[in-house]
Image (tube, rainbow over all chains, first blue to last red; front, side):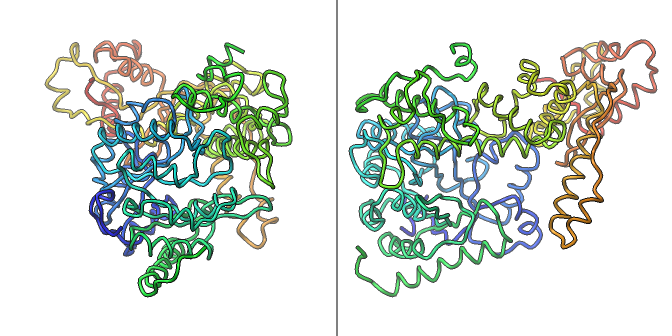
Length: 286
Length: 311
């Protein structure tokens, strides 16, 4: 949705991830960019260059925080020290919304630093939704949860991934960061139709979208974020835009990072699909 | 087994994966089992270990809770996550420890890292802290770094200090006026949290700098056409000989610096960091220190912004 309560009633356009190799270019050339997504953990530090750069960026640009370690799905209780640091950063950036992943990644205080797939059960949906509510209440900022790409599924699962996502966000009354590349990757790895996924989620809760590149192997696809976006993912993006409306969109490029201009140009390709989605109401793909 | 588990922080895995997830306890069991599997060291061929800790085939354990598809078995799917876990953490430690890598060589460094992460997996939400317990591990298990354990320890302490200097807390700097207002006997200062004071048995500051310069040259040369000729021109960095040094690892205007210290200056700063009153801290430097030396050192430390009020 263009502006909704899940993205702080903002209408951001097309952004890219703020990455170290681009710092000098951005600070010197001050290119026009709608917004930057920052990885929260990279700036949850006590001082030094990361915060100096962030402050300089914020003088010129809008930033939105994206986390990788909140682990809404971990059975562990939220870590107080972590939350305190995150809240300090939220106050500093004034991020209109904050996103993290619908996954788990830690147990007993030990961290895998991976985005591990959830078991799609009603019990874990209830737990996860409650944790999201607690964290949102503490941070006092809207939260969007992102669907992850996955390479494994559990026997105990009781529903599809999109049904689980819906169950969690409805119970938590939070937003969705819809990663269409992750939907594509998981669809290939788990043999489902990605358009069923897109059609099945509550579109009014989508506060942001992600696009990215991936890598195909013989038996599976990996979400590598080291390529331009592939055409099937753009097609999914166009369909998602048709369903959800024009939504704040971000290109993720995290490995083998090319020049700033190349990354930004790739992100701006989203405009073609936005225009296309606006112009034509194509029949839903099956 | 129990002491190894205590170090990792993980509680023992369940004997079997839960058949359904009705309670939070069931979710914990599933997550604990999967985490134990993912953090198990890889085989020599970078694969998931074929046998579980209770002697059962890993295929049987995987089949209990992971679905296969027509291309990947449950074992294959867990192996993907097992590999990603190890490759990710080894990559991070590789990047954060160029000096230690140079001391040990890549193969030995990787074996050390595998042993370290197996004993001390990450206990922090941020990968920034991954190497925090590496000096402790090298002291506890010197066989991974022998016969260069002393040098490896010095380099590791130095490289961790750089992480602290990069993004450690900076408190408001103490002003000369504030110092002048308080009698020395009552004045308690503190050292900025981002400053690390190190007494090292090797001149590793020069060594790590040389290693980084060599690595930068290699990167530059590998991007040129006459790569082979340029690479042969890059000198090897020889391991330093044992020599005691005192060094402060710090930052100035958000850039990393190393500053060699004379021993009395180091002792004074150590006393300040330990919370001793200024008068006692100056005494810690020893009787041979002249007042003008002390004055010069304090002027320098104040200029660098190292001193701050004690909390």
